[in-house]
Image (tube, rainbow over all chains, first blue to last red; front, side, top):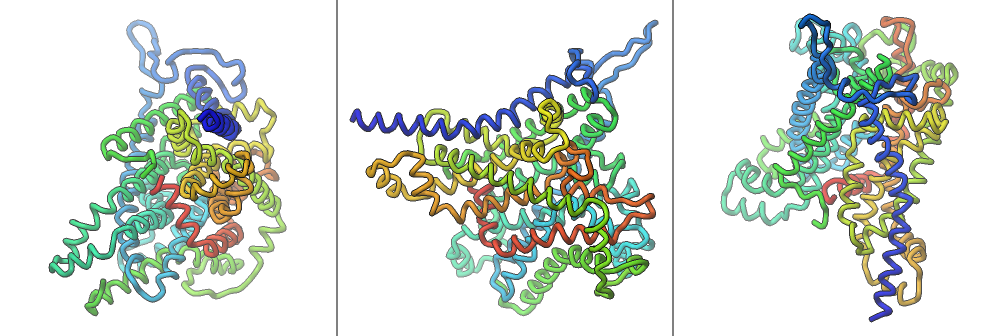
Length: 311
Length: 276
């Protein structure tokens, strides 16, 4: 008995030793920078003078600028309409793109779950958008959506869908549509593959039984298939949503400087590095982190997700 | 599923639509990259030219060749370090019962879902203070934030499923934990290591925000940033030909790798998400 405890203790000690390097690196690369970002949001740091930053409390978040004689205005992140616009853009982008990706991903997964000649080819084909770097997809689509020489306008005009060419990425009205289009193209495969994995765990005899009972396939889908794959879909949705809420690269490259697509990440990055507003940008990053954390926790609670593993 | 001819037709229309939608943008980038001069501004649905000008142009002018090398170096080193640290960590998390394991697993999962923007300011400060700014080390170091949690997580789910008898036999023979990892488990883990490594490599290869922020020198950049910054003198002079050629160059190796390891990748993605 004593030998066993000895062995267990030895094993536990070894385990902590094995975990130590990983934990140290994560603390240095994630934990500390997160704390510093939060701290810098309460200072007056500028890009050139981060080291000499002074604590200024909540001024980056909300501050009443008094002009004297009862005159003044609220400034700071929480009073900035551009920030709230960015929050709104992020939420709209996430809701629309993740909804479309889930719906299309479900369709693609159902198709790939059917038996047909060339299924391997189609499954390989849908991996292509997933494998292409985001920046490359942004450039490829920017070229296809070019207002004068773009093939997308050519196709749409030919089939009579639009009367004249549209400046998809440059025009504020269509910029968000353009961004969503590229995001849906790029990430639907991920959704489809995760949902497909869920579908393949559904035992085949359930469908046989439904068929023998004469249940309509559409009804079978909604009453049998969908409830069974719901956990897989829910997890796929949260992964995609977390990705969308932090979106930066696609928007930065596809629609630079457009108000209607500016998301929280783009807003924060601009203030950090382009506007020399390092402290203000840090405050925006902190708020972004909080908003994403709240949405995630709410989703996990409401969806009663079990992310803890152990099946 | 589809016995009725009308259903069969519907299924095939869907299949073809999916394949065309998935492949067309890349196909169009490829045919554009082989056009030169004013050919580029004519809209063609089929290949009309086979000219290597854009490729020669992008590889010989500017620093793109160097950027490719940087990307290979940064991604390879990032993956090697993450795998090394992840194998031992995954052993501890999957095979040893200790207090705080669940909390640790949850923390790792949370870090993997971190918005990169939340650490950007703090990381920037740290990288400058450590003198890593403008070097590949800044990227290798910062990429650990997403490759490490991911590799640890996937390898843990994989290791959990290995038979316990193997380990017991080794313990009876007096093997130490590190011997168990490298002598007993390693040989069984190659498929998992290849898949996880490949997925981490793709993530590092494609990363943009850190690469844009922590490197400002053209010759030190990685390819995503280099492509994003390829530009002409004005809005009207965007060099679409070279951009498409560069895009094809950075994408083809990934597509080849992904197609070779297709099945394993799907399994790896699923282990990272669904099972997680």
